[in-house]
Image (cartoon, rainbow, N blue to C red):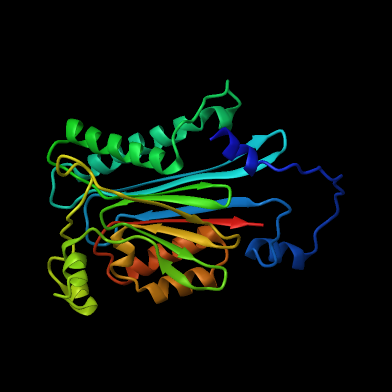
Length: 296
């Protein structure tokens, strides 16, 4: 793992800076992110959440951590983003999602503490996928101990340099919006209707309207062990990762999500607009959204 970080850290000389007043046109370009180019890759993020229009409690929980791992020969973007949706109808779903977030995030960030905060070097013997899998297992067993009978989804993205590792269980989702505007669903729903659709027993339209569409076949806290999907893929410069609970994707189409993000270059405003779109569509569930982008 040390060699991995050394490969990521490249030497860059600092140029001398000259200050000058910004024109109104330049200020507007900065605010809109148009034409934004960074000398070094920069990771930026934003998040949004709402209880929705028809729920009395919020069973969603999210975590967004964006940082830079500094080194003597360069800087590496680092980010950890998580969305968890406590299972409705189960005891203490909101406690389960909160516990899952805290345990998962704590386990992952702890591995990188020495790199983030300049502490004495800590050897990392695991791959990124093994780190994410271990954190998922810890969250699973914590829920079983602290909130037996409950459960939650969890979808997480660990960004390191220009790659990301996804860990996923349940039906929260991760999407990637490529620089060319294409929106791809990265995760597979662990739901009953998705499985029936894969078996050819339901069409996509029937699955979307099924009264059983919220029934999960995998979730943290449920069953003896958890079987998450864990994989790594490139995070292209200019690309945007979207993590969300089904309170968003269940009522806002992928085409509309894509349009909102493309038309709203400021990530914080895009999160707000996505949450607003879900509430405008009736807001039947809690809504959680995270957007992260590598610029440069």
